[in-house]
Length: 154
View 1 (cartoon, rainbow, N blue to C red):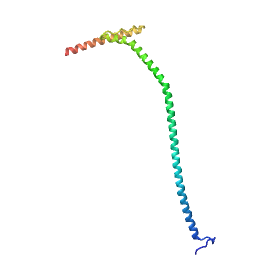
View 2 (tube, helix red, strand yellow):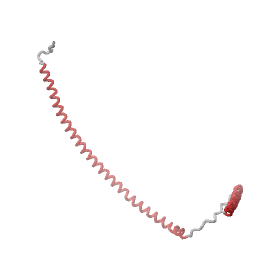
View 3 (tube, rainbow, N blue to C red):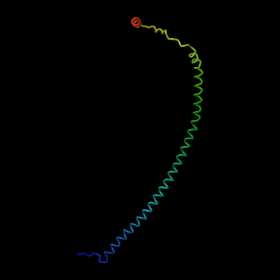
View 4 (tube, helix red, strand yellow):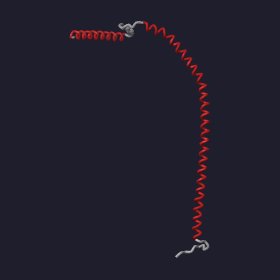
């Protein structure tokens, strides 16, 4: 059995049609709202792009201004540094050119003589020095004797 609705004046068919009307109206509103949202998003994107471009141009202009200030401050310093470098370089070259010329004119000599070692102050130092001199002489003698043996064998 079918139960009757509590409100006898409401027809079930009318309720069905009202539901279809709600769905249809909601769909239309959603479509128009979607279109409106797309338009708003497009406008926002365009406005943001314009604002970003304006900020980019402003930043570039500020950068160019700062660059010009820095270059204006550095150029005189660079010129002074270059002048100072040139003066120092020419002074060093002028001082060293006679020395280099003197060195290049001397013939190359074989270094046969060694400089004498400075004398030791302490008596213990003299004893060590005499022992080392004696050791050097004995090594020298042994070396020359060994060379003589090698020469005889050859």
